[in-house]
Length: 315
Image 1 (cartoon, one colour):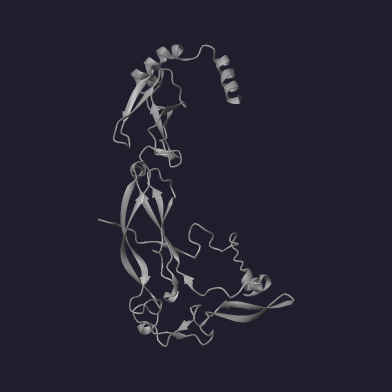
Image 2: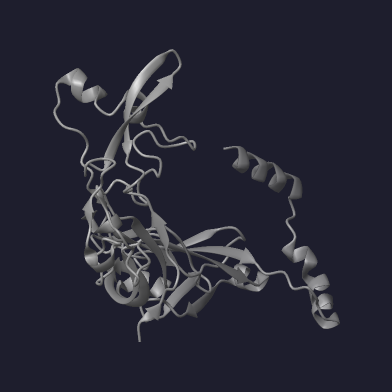
């Protein structure tokens, strides 16, 4: 049964991997030198010919797909079902009734019109998208009743794709030509981006290919040492051997049991942070036993220990 993903985001022509503000994007500014200096400014200055093509591209679409850490460990093949915009079959994406269009009289079918605009003390001829035909160069006498003139309808689509082993949170998979249709059916269809989100694991966190976890242990386990076995992602038990005399805050490394490394090709490590578990309540019998062995557990050279710890911190 495919997973249902009912929500998605639409992006402009640059897609989610680029700036939504065009070539000079960033900081909330949308700077188009052609609009400021005129549509033929660069072509006339450098001898180029012709204006910008009026064939436009459909919007890109981004969806967020959640997978488990186990899927990241092994890699997985995913199948999801969602509604995506598609070209209206009744009007061939034109938005016109019966698909019948005619050349726009306002721009003579060019999709762009020349306007005069004053910028400071200068007057420039500015070439802009024709507002009558929205840059398509075509108009219609009546709108398509099926799509209300948009040229697009929503259709349930099943997508199948592979999540590579070791993929990072936020990885975007690109499916070319699966985004929104071009406006009025004139142009290239956009792309579909699938952004990978990894759900939380009960005890593992990741740092690149390494898996990190904490291991709370009692004081006697730290003093005497112990061995702990837990389930692991590869289906085999993960055995954590804690040496005698381990202190709280030390880390233990279990080599080559982490996630696949996308760059290195090998596997990362499992890094275990050992912590001292402090019980909230101690019964009277245990408390009496602790009091009897207090002197044996406490450092006899406390001041020297304090100095050594300070020196270790500063080194």
